[in-house]
Amino acid sequence: MHQAGATALTQLLQFELPDVDLLTVPCSCGHTAHFKELRTKTFLSVVGPVQIRRPYYLCSHCSKGQHPIDLELGIANLESSPGVRRMEAIVGSNAPFGRGCEPLKVLAGLEVTAKAIERTAETIGADVARRQQQEVARAKQLILPAVSKQNIPILYVLMDGTGVPVVPAETQGRAGKIEGQRAHTRECKLGCVFIQTTVDDRGRPIRDPDSTTYTGAIETAEEFGLRIYTEAWRRGWEWATLRVVIADGAIWIWNLADTHFPGAIQIVDLYHARQHLWAIAALLFPNDSTQQERWMISSQHLLDNGQIERLVNRLRKIESDNAEVVQKLSLEAEYFERNAPRMRYPEFRKRGLFVGSGVVEAGCKTVIASRLKCSGMFWTVAAANAIIALRCCLFNGRFESYWELASAA
Image (cartoon, rainbow, N blue to C red; front, side):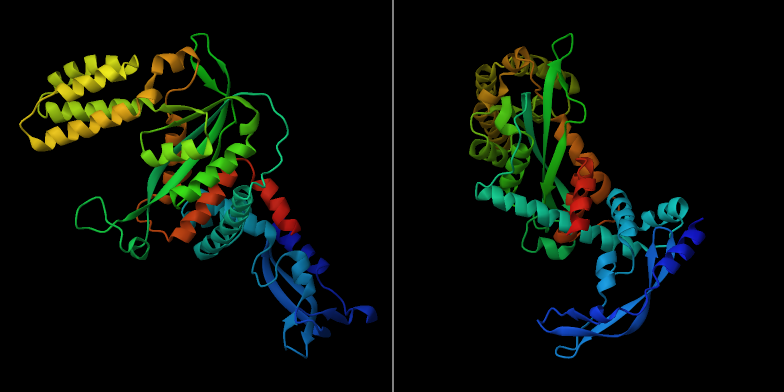
């Protein structure tokens, strides 16, 4: 059936000599290109290889040739049709490029190379990223997208970061986690926005189905702040009755929250805060798991009940002859003291709010890690950002809208 379709399409795309009034076409140099001859080209369509014969025009002023039909069909300077490129983009966003060849062969009968999938996925992803950046730039000028009035009880904004392995050229001058070694990753900042309307019969919050959208890139905190603000605005931040920002204790995140989401309820992820306590327990009792658990029971009780001031006092009263332990205890005490207003967990739970950032942490795994952190992968920042933009577009259910706009452009 594919072969029959390709044969039929080939017959349909055999253009005749142009009429007298179509012997010339405008040239980009401002002059006129004249019809010279009919030329053939083979490209890959969704039904297989197709050969087209179409008019060729040449400008005598700039010596530039053109095939106007190619532009109409979306194959100008390309080896595949828009339909094939759409398939390549989707498989290239979901799995390593080399693995995309087999699904296209088995499911669509198309023979494509891993390089073709890579080139297409990154090109389309870069275009998605470019359009997103245009929207962010407009938001920077306070030209925000029009959002119709909505009934949004609670809107959440969550932020996190995860490392993406990159080629050595992308980490020049950047220190790694191990002293004396260069960095091997660049941080991808990821944000997500979702809505909560109800709680269950036990008063626990329920995230609205299909309400989560993602946005992210390898970029500075300042750039990411505008990005997540734009996404939140698009999702109806203006119309939300209650607005909440949840994240771990990273200072850069709370600086962004203060800048772009003033007045929002800020919550430190409870489970991240518990990890800090476990780190302290391991520091105090390095070889005694029983003592660690015993210390954790009372300390976690203070944390879970929002008694952060008492917890800070407890940490500051711990004595040690080890200067390194004293220093780390001081840093941990400062962490809890600084985030005390964001750790009133009983109050947050009473209002039926989420107190964990699991949604964005899961996003770091499903949106970023599952595609960009596979074994042996090393990215350029440009290529990584293209795939991140493409995956966010797909996860957000906006790819078809993008494709329609891009095809019409």
